[in-house]
Length: 155
Image (cartoon, rainbow, N blue to C red; front, top):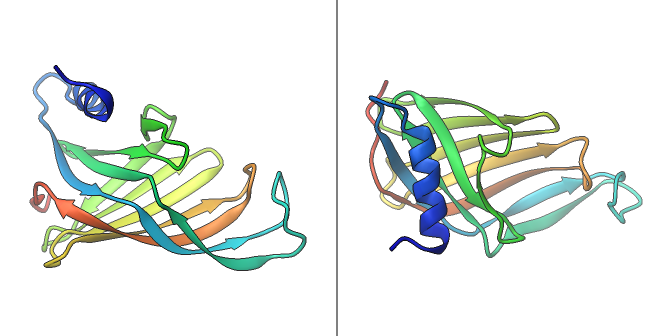
C-alpha cells in the first residue's frame, strides 16, 4: 500500500506517464539553504530592501522526467506536496553531455531556475526563485543536497 508522500509522487508519475511514455525520478533533493533579497510590498514587514539568509528546512523536491518533459514534485515549507505542473507551472528542461539538468519552472508570478548537478560525486541542486508579485516579494538563490536516482542521457 502506498501512503503519504509516496502516494503523491506515484500520482505525479502517473499523470506524467502518458501512453507510450515512461516517467522516471532523476533526483531527490532535501532541505535547502541560501540567501534571499527581500523587497517591501505585499505582506512583507520590511521597510527597505535587504539581504538575509534563507532556508527551507522541512521541504524538498524530486526531479521527474517523462521522455523530454520535466516536472518538479515539491514539498514546501508548509508541508504541501504538489507537482509544479499540477500547480499551474510550465517547464522547460535540458540535459548536458555530463548528465546535469537545467530546468526552468514558469508560473504567472514566479520564475524558478534549477541546475541539478547530477554528475558531481555528491550531487546538489542550485536554484533561484524570483517572486515579483507575490505575498512576500523576493529573489533567492539556494543550494540543496540531492541523490541522483537516474542519470539522464543527453536528449
